Image 1 (cartoon, each protein chain N blue to C red):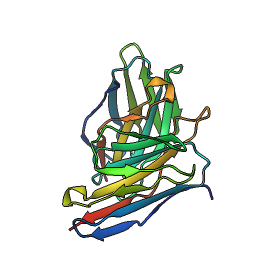
Image 2 (image 1 turned 180 degrees about the horizontal axis):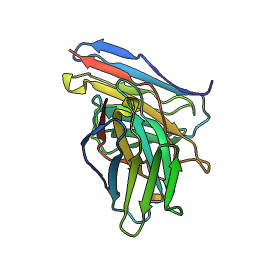
Image 3 (image 1 turned 90 degrees about the vertical axis):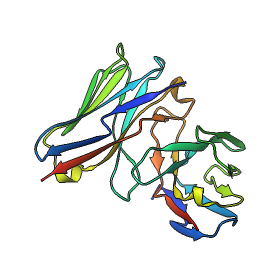
Image 4 (image 1 turned 45 degrees about the vertical axis):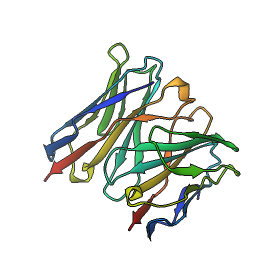
Length: 114
Length: 113
C-alpha cells in the first residue's frame, strides 16, 4: 500500500546524542517535507526537498540537517540532541503533478531528549 | 512571503450545531487552499480543498468558501458530531505550488455531546 513511513515512532534519548529520524514514502512523490509540532499545536516547517540532491531550510530555525539521496528517502539528523528538541517530528510528501499541492503526512516520531 | 491567519484558536459547539473556522491570506498569487484535520495522537489528514477558480466546494457535512477579493476562506461543518472534535489547519499554496504550503496556527474544535 502506498504510504509514508516514519521510524522510530517514539524515541527517548540523552542530551548530546546524535540521532537520525527516518522517513520513507512509497507514493512516488518528488517533494518531501519535515515539520516540528508540539502535540496539537502549530506546524513548523524545518526542511523540504523538491527532488534528489535538493534540500532547503524552512521557516523554523533548526539545528538539524537533511539529505535526499533517493527519491523515496528523506532522513533528518540531529548531531547533538538537546532538551529543546523534544517535540513531534512529522514527515510529509507531495507530487509534482496536477494534484501536486496535496501533502500527505507520515505518522510522526515523538522525540524526548532527557 | 505568504502569511495565513486562522481564527478562532479554540471553538466549542453543541452536537448538531454548525462550526465555522476562518482564515485570511496575504499573497494574492496563492491559488490552492486545503484544510487538514488532526485528531488527537494522529497525523494531519486532508479533508477538503479548494482552488482559486472556484468559490465554494461541498463534501457531505463540510464545505469551504473562498473570497479571492477579500483574501479569505472558511471551513463550514454542519450537524457537528463528537468525532468532528480535532484540530483543524487551513493552508495556502503560494507561488503555484513551487514553495511549500503555509499553514495557519490551527483551531481546536470541541463538539459537546
